[in-house]
Image 1 (cartoon, rainbow, N blue to C red):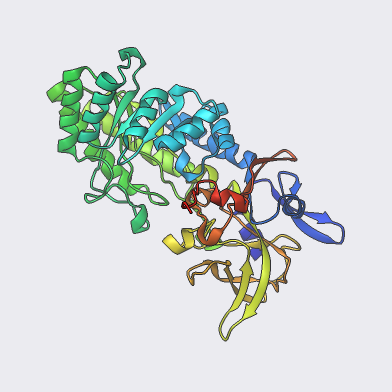
Image 2: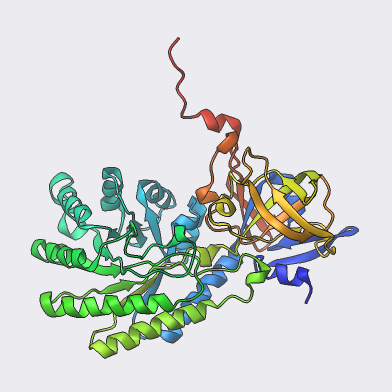
Length: 448
């Protein structure tokens, strides 16, 4: 298998090389990338709906085969959320995980139904709480103080009728980490997320005494992991706690969510990556066996994938500007980087790439792909074997759907890229490119 074949596995499922005159060019969902770049400019982000749909199908098939009780999927909006993504998630009957009033507004703009909006947040502001109370079906409570504030807002400030209030889940902190980057570990003892078991027990009693609809339990250990083993240990601890809680208070959750965070291969060296079915099979076995062992009823299971739904569906297109040679490196300088994808700088993420035109050309040596920003850390890819590239060529970087644009910035006055949605030969602009005037929309000049 050639290097081109290996890298193609990282791209959306509809990606293929097609004959374009006297050359071969990459196409996604029947849309030529050269034409898309010519029409919309670069940097440009592409989202392939077929790849999104297939990821949902894989999750649902695995859940159907492995879990006898009810189950569902929540799309973790933090991976990437715009109105079109929210529309797609709602049509696929996914819940949408929104963090704060901003993401709730995006979901509302897409007319997502209230019962499909689930709200997270480690330090929800009053505005976040008000938006969640009005528009969400479920609020995941991070700590006891938040629970008390939420009750006060619901009962005394907003005077929401009991039947119209969102259901509540408690977010636990099991004290266990998955193997991933330190910055994306969320379940260890010193994590800022969630509550310990003692605090959670107090939260349960608080809800029971006030007849608050406490419906579920949630925890999340981290993001971009490939070994689900630590989730098994966390489930053991959570189920032990639930058994004790049931015996002491009579309360038991209708729903249990072990979060999401399943990883994806970003570089050909990461292949093969364990499958979604491996991940779901492990979790469902642990819950089923754990509940049987403790004589507990099986809860509704809600999984919260983000990256593993959208990462492969996304491709970033860049245009080559300058090509520089230094004593030890060949620099391929492109028109995007740190501002639209900070992940290499934040997490050391390794990406791969292909030239859009004649992508099967043999590599002539390692290349360093970097952006135009005033930071030495503005490097997208280090030491990747690539062919000889010239000014004006297009480079496609796969696995670009998750945590690029949602973490993007206007650093150095960068204008955020356009996003185009691809489906069955049709390309739809779903986010326009920012223009310089967008950068001053919030500005107010000082008085003379």
